[in-house]
Image (cartoon, rainbow, N blue to C red; front, side, top):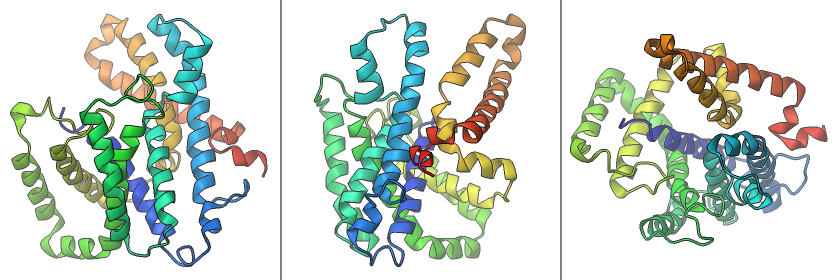
Length: 310
């Protein structure tokens, strides 16, 4: 399926859009470094957000997933594997890579540059380094992903900064699309996408930062992301969609365990084979929606440890 790998890249893109929209705005860009780093636990600076809203929840959910995942795979429950899987590597690869990317953005933001193109230039050496490490199968701790999927985080930085570029030129892009017509624009982009894509080799292309994206994958991902963002702009506000988007990190943490349970159950009932995908999808979504709602209602600090202090 040539579309699947682009969705996670789009999440990196949107994350970068939101980060740079905030960090390059006034008065934050004119403030002292300490303001956006925010060393106070109760504050919501970028550095504390990374720690309490991404890193710690990633570890907590990795710990929750560890025992059932290990038993299902038939692997041994040892202290070494527990530490490696939950703390050193982390099973939530997207949020682990996102932490690496955002920490690099924090480093770049210490320059206090106001122009997003400066951050694009600063990001390129990191992206190239990540590409080189993946292409040459360089391993630090005997594993491609240790620590914290850092190679993916290096390459994902490209999409975060592109999200910042999109924010800078968003009004111009929207104006251009409105002039040429949304339908015509979308059609041109899709035709371009298919002209670039080599259908005979799509299975071998690397288009996800998890497996080491290639240069053609960067191009295809940006085109696909642009289509996704454009289509999302056409959506009218829907309460359910808004709720899911605001709690997307919770749905991500549950995106492996809950669908796995539903797929396992459905596959054991022959009468459900014909509708297996729809049953698994709808059931997984509703179950995740319920779990996220209950977690936010009764133990919201699992998504942000700072809420324990509030």
